[in-house]
Image (cartoon, rainbow, N blue to C red):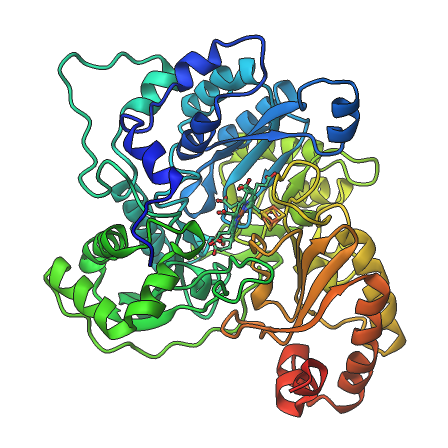
Length: 559
Ligand code: SRM
Ligand code: SF4
């Protein structure tokens, strides 16, 4: 490990607890951009500077600066969101954004296309709606995920409260956010302090997810830190602790890799905050601050060993983790349609393709969800953002059920309107035109790719197969593609690395089968495998499991 610290470390150290010169940059009217160093700091405030990549070349030709705008991410711990909060995001998307907003793979909201002069008003409105954007991005703990649907049982509600407590405990304490975006004055003589993070925060982003078996919708093994709720007869006993998961890789760099986390033991509910805090502090002190591609917790653990890591956490937290308890996951996707809560209310999981809430001719989702939010305001209930870019209309009264369902159907939101099981369960990251790191299309290409795949499945009597397909525009892995049965990872325009063989519970990584393949090549690889699967699968066997069992995958990989 080199000892020279990365440039980001210098930026953090010199930032005065994340202030930098952001306030000054906001007043610099001639440019739509912020200072380069400040763009690293705004991430901690939930704000990314981007430019419209569809317009880049034309703007260059016209000698104009890129079409700068900002993506804003609002944290929604566990995905819990009131109708008013939903309507606020919709209003901001329409007024300041690109007339759509996005439900992310981490149960948060994203707005795109907000120009610099509207940043402060947008952030202020988000805060007025009792949400914030602080720590939605940056080298800190991000939005804490939790299996949604808290009303489904008392245990869910308890687990959700634990997720919320973790989120609050690990939220940065700097007052810079309030000064810059909410015009709160710094109290004279007050000193910023970050008791958990310190002045330089973490070496890299940090992510936490809480799963409630049998559902692994939060993909707990992809998190830096995961908690698996262990219950007995509807009583929460505690949590298995999982550490060191992560998805991000770099093409052609074998030093980077996706990793599923290790289960290191069990803790009681009242030990969760100490465990979380000290998993964070061990990473703070031992994570690699010289190479950002090697700075996630997964590398700290892979390099130093799981036993070393557990010892560190136990001694710092002053506790011993118990032996991990048994659990079983059955799925890492969402459960669609209506379910009945233990409180007598109904919960309806709707389908939002790639999490994009927009009005399109075919599916006016923005309008549909607006109408549903109004019904919830009058009748009680709220929204739950799912970890798979969908939304649950939660806590619907018996009286309101028919209306909610009619509105959902009229606007193309009902799961049976997706057209196939495949489409319902697919995930695609944002990619072009906003993501600065995208190498290929994802969200905009996914519908076409799925149409081709549906045709292929149809030819082999597999049209009802609930395959898990995940696509990203680059190897950073924002749609957790390395856990999919079929994963497409962008390499160049129109070209993807094809990964196969994940399971449906998010416990096994898939494997690279083809590099840099175009659509034709991808379908040509899939066709014989699907045909084989159709003829020889054991009843209810999943495609990824079949590929592993029959060694078809090994053959495709060339082992
Ligand atoms: Fe991500 C960077 C979008 C979930 C791994 N991710 C980005 C940026 C901010 C691009 C950038 O740095 O300039 C993308 C913004 C695109 C845009 O225009 O909106 C972006 N990531 C997303 C979202 C919106 C994808 C989506 O379609 O939902 C998800 C927002 C989550 C949230 O609400 O916080 C999103 N990103 C993830 C996940 C999945 C997860 O967390 O469960 C991962 C893989 C898990 C992990 O972190 O290992 C993920 N994003 C990355 C990485 C690679 C990190 C690494 O360890 O190498 C980057 C690049 C980076 O950090 O340098 C990245
Ligand atoms: Fe962008 Fe890559 Fe993440 Fe997709 S996976 S949103 S292309 S960083």
